[in-house]
Amino acid sequence: MSSERWRNVLLVLSAMALVACSSAAMYRPQTHRTANGYQDYALGPQQFQVHYVLSSASRQKVMDYAMLRAAELTLSQSYDWFMIEHQSIQAVREDKRTERMPSPPVVTRDCGLLACRTSVQNQGLPSDASGWNERTALEAVLQITLGKGVRPALANYHDASEVVQKLAHLKK
Image 1 (cartoon, rainbow, N blue to C red):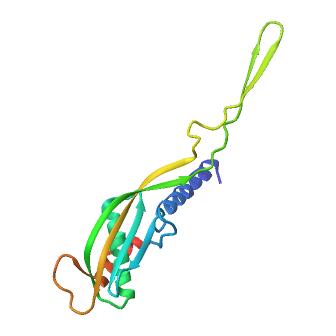
Image 2 (image 1 turned 180 degrees about the vertical axis):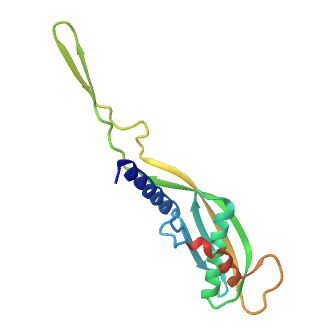
């Protein structure tokens, strides 16, 4: 195989790897407060609060994920539909501790007519020595009430099976 062909194969494989990483499933339980994913809490026998945090996403996308979780939660509790009592989207700050390595020393050599002089300067930590990396994510919060049977025909009532079917692509 020619080097040009190897280069093209490598380029295609790199692109596929990038796509695979960027499209990693974001629908999952949340592992800690600022991680992507969902958490839900029972507020009563038929009432729940669903939280969904998502980085680098639009308000619509984070709300879609929260709606999908609300629908799946409804079905898992053996109910047919859910009513949104309250909904909000807010920004949450993600703090990630990053390791900072000192910058390499700078070696300078000054040579004159008779001799050379070498000096070494340690640069220490980069200017952002704190080691904190801050990003903003969005959190959608839904307070829902679950119900069975015929769903009322009002805007804030949602058929759980229909929502799961409509938003199933988010799980891929």
